[in-house]
Image (cartoon, rainbow, N blue to C red):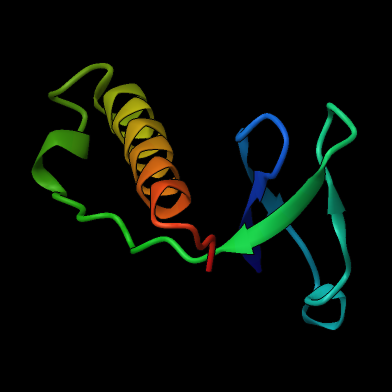
Amino acid sequence: MKYSFICKDCSKVTEVTRRLSEYSDPFTCECGGDGERIILSAPTVSLDPICGDHIGATDRWAKGRERQMKKEAHNLKEHGSYK
Protein backbone atom coordinates (compact mmCIF):
# COMPACT_ATOMS: atom_id res chain seq x y z
CA MET A 1 0.00 0.00 0.00
CA LYS A 2 1.09 3.59 -0.52
CA TYR A 3 1.30 5.96 2.41
CA SER A 4 2.11 9.67 2.46
CA PHE A 5 4.37 11.16 5.10
CA ILE A 6 5.24 14.77 5.90
CA CYS A 7 8.56 15.65 7.49
CA LYS A 8 8.19 17.55 10.77
CA ASP A 9 11.45 19.41 10.04
CA CYS A 10 11.45 20.33 6.33
CA SER A 11 7.72 19.75 5.49
CA LYS A 12 8.59 17.58 2.49
CA VAL A 13 5.77 15.22 1.51
CA THR A 14 6.90 11.71 0.52
CA GLU A 15 4.84 8.82 -0.80
CA VAL A 16 6.10 5.42 0.38
CA THR A 17 5.03 1.90 -0.59
CA ARG A 18 4.88 -0.41 2.42
CA ARG A 19 3.49 -3.80 3.33
CA LEU A 20 0.45 -3.82 5.57
CA SER A 21 2.63 -5.35 8.31
CA GLU A 22 4.87 -2.22 8.12
CA TYR A 23 1.93 0.15 8.63
CA SER A 24 3.11 1.50 11.99
CA ASP A 25 6.86 1.52 11.25
CA PRO A 26 8.46 4.97 11.71
CA PHE A 27 9.48 7.04 8.68
CA THR A 28 12.66 9.11 8.47
CA CYS A 29 12.95 11.84 5.83
CA GLU A 30 16.05 12.35 3.66
CA CYS A 31 16.93 15.34 5.86
CA GLY A 32 16.96 13.08 8.93
CA GLY A 33 13.74 14.47 10.39
CA ASP A 34 10.89 12.36 11.64
CA GLY A 35 7.97 11.89 9.31
CA GLU A 36 4.33 11.65 10.23
CA ARG A 37 1.76 9.78 8.15
CA ILE A 38 -0.90 11.99 6.60
CA ILE A 39 -4.17 11.12 4.98
CA LEU A 40 -4.78 12.73 1.61
CA SER A 41 -7.95 12.61 -0.40
CA ALA A 42 -8.04 10.53 -3.55
CA PRO A 43 -7.44 12.46 -6.76
CA THR A 44 -10.24 13.19 -9.16
CA VAL A 45 -9.44 11.37 -12.38
CA SER A 46 -10.81 12.11 -15.81
CA LEU A 47 -10.03 9.39 -18.32
CA ASP A 48 -10.49 11.52 -21.46
CA PRO A 49 -7.15 13.42 -21.24
CA ILE A 50 -5.20 10.24 -20.55
CA CYS A 51 -5.97 8.69 -23.94
CA GLY A 52 -3.28 8.63 -26.64
CA ASP A 53 -4.64 11.78 -28.30
CA HIS A 54 -3.34 13.98 -25.50
CA ILE A 55 0.45 13.75 -25.37
CA GLY A 56 1.84 14.63 -21.95
CA ALA A 57 -1.49 14.26 -20.12
CA THR A 58 -0.04 11.76 -17.67
CA ASP A 59 2.81 14.15 -16.80
CA ARG A 60 0.33 16.99 -16.29
CA TRP A 61 -1.78 14.77 -14.04
CA ALA A 62 1.29 13.76 -11.98
CA LYS A 63 2.36 17.40 -11.55
CA GLY A 64 -1.18 18.37 -10.56
CA ARG A 65 -1.26 15.52 -8.02
CA GLU A 66 2.04 16.68 -6.53
CA ARG A 67 0.75 20.26 -6.24
CA GLN A 68 -2.44 19.00 -4.57
CA MET A 69 -0.45 16.89 -2.08
CA LYS A 70 1.71 19.88 -1.14
CA LYS A 71 -1.35 22.12 -0.80
CA GLU A 72 -3.14 19.63 1.46
CA ALA A 73 -0.02 19.05 3.55
CA HIS A 74 0.39 22.82 3.96
CA ASN A 75 -3.24 23.19 5.02
CA LEU A 76 -2.89 20.34 7.51
CA LYS A 77 0.30 21.84 8.93
CA GLU A 78 -1.35 25.27 9.37
CA HIS A 79 -4.15 23.72 11.40
CA GLY A 80 -1.70 22.01 13.75
CA SER A 81 -2.44 18.42 12.80
CA TYR A 82 -0.89 16.10 10.22
CA LYS A 83 -3.50 13.35 10.55
